[in-house]
Image (tube, rainbow, N blue to C red; front, side, top):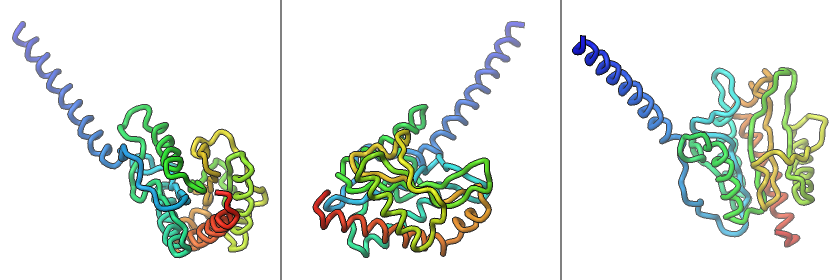
Length: 240
C-alpha cells in the first residue's frame, strides 16, 4: 500500500511538472512577440510626429475572423510614414513590427504598453501624437472614421483641421465633429494628441474597406497629407 501511494504521488508530480512545463513554453513562445525594448527609442531630429499603431504582439485588439486590428493599423502606419518621409516630416513609430510594448507578460503589461507609448512621445519631444485604432460596436450599422482629441486647445485645433482634410479625400463621412476625451490613456502626452478610429470592424462595408490594400493606401495618403499640413503650419508659426 505504501509503495502504491508513493507511485501515485510520483505520477501526480510528474503530471504537474508536465503542465507547468507546457505553460512556461507557451509563455516563452508568446513573450518573444510580446516584449518591448526597455530603452527609449532613438529619436528623429527635430520634434517628430509620433505615429502609434495600437496593440500588437499577443494583443490583437478588436477582431473578426480573418482580420485583427493590430495588423490593419500597423499596415496603415507604415504606409503613412512612407508618405511623411516624402513630405520631410520626422516620424517616430511606436512600433514597426508585430510586437507588444508592455514587456513581461504579467497583469501589468497593458498599462506598461500604454505608458511606453506615452513615454516614447514625451522622450522624443513630439510635436503631435497620432494613435491609430479600429473601432467595434454591437450596432453593426455604425461605420466611418472617428476623431478623438486630448482636451487642449492645440489638440482641438489639430483635430478639426485633421478632420476637415479627411473629409476632402473623402475617407470620413460621419456627422459628428471631433470628440474630446479625458479617459483615453494614450492621449495623455505632453504633445497635442489625437486618436483616429479608422472604421468599424463590426460593419461589413467598413470591414471590406479596411481589408483592401488600396483603401489602406488611400487612408495613408489622407493621414499623411493632413499630418504634414498640421506639422508645417505649426513649424511655420514656431509654436512647437
